[in-house]
Image (cartoon, rainbow, N blue to C red; front, side):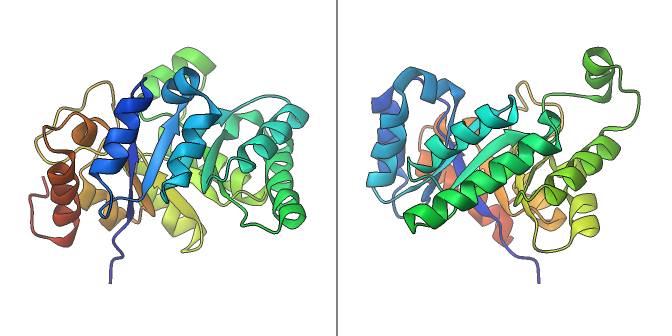
Length: 243
């Protein structure tokens, strides 16, 4: 039986009022929200704390990528905000990823609280094979690179990865059921893909083995975010379009 993934709504706005209004409008339906660089830069750590204080969970998507000691410090600070999950970049290397995983574990031991999940960003969903060749001289396939980075993430102690649905089935097959797979680039049937290149519908992502789906514009730009969220959940349950 295919498990229905959790839905994370991306708060890709720049104003506290808009973010909190969206959290309130989705209460009782969605309890997991992504705070990325856009909102975090505009409103700071207090925004994260306000969302968690409301009872919702936060996925902090800042894609930490620096020397190991700096990333470890960033992870420690993020843990202190009470988040449930965060991202780091897998291209930062195994030492950096291990430092992040170790710091999260040590923080949980010191505080007695829950350890947030750490997932490694593999290849951005806005990038194609041609983009990879342009920026990194890599001439292999996207899936091959994603699997390599996923392997390093798992061996370094991360809980999972961020990858497009095009690579999700291969990751699930290679690493089993325990790995967390966060899938951005989700677009309901008939929706515009925007600046994304490797996208999928919620139903396809579910069938490929995603753990969490990150949905932004199709929900927060909708006239009724609650109805849009309900339609996405309904699509996964089989009561909506799948293509």
